[in-house]
Length: 204
Ligand code: HEM
Image (cartoon, rainbow, N blue to C red):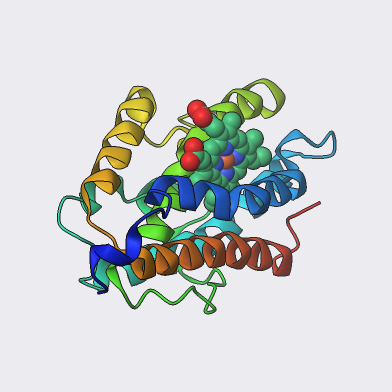
């Protein structure tokens, strides 16, 4: 990695991630159907199937990479198991879940910084999940026991875990080049997820 001297005047990692992904977040949010009047339980199930098709391979790639800097608890933060429970609740069996299509065009997760960028996106998504959870409960009567657990994957711990994640990010010494890798990976995670969901025909 470059020396810290290259980093003078560069924004902290979190700020760089926010600046680098803000527009991609807005773009994806607009195309997700959670607030669409046409969303029904069938569309919701197809949406979660498509989420699974992205989360499963990206979480496997991250956790198998051995590149995530110490201090991130993969067991505590894995979200694919909750997606599996939701898909069971929505009527799929293990065979059906294993047969679901999975994204093969994942972001390059070849450096610790790139892993952090992808993790930022997956952890941040739990915040929006709080809004979506309420909406799905009101609109489709979907809650923790019948297919909506993923949207509230950390439950009452959501705010605490986000703060802990930001503290973890803040503790890691990343030089300017590493920060750029993190931002690139976060951007690729957003755009890769959108392209994947688009290919599965679940977006507006
Ligand atoms: C319609 C869908 C979505 C809505 C309504 C939504 C809404 C929100 C809201 C309200 C926040 C800020 C929460 C806070 O500051 O307490 C947030 C943060 C965030 N969301 Fe989303 N979100 C959606 C989908 C997603 C998706 C699909 C992803 C990624 C896969 C994502 C990634 C993030 C990230 C990374 C942050 C953290 C930004 C930061 O504070 O640094 N969101 N979202």
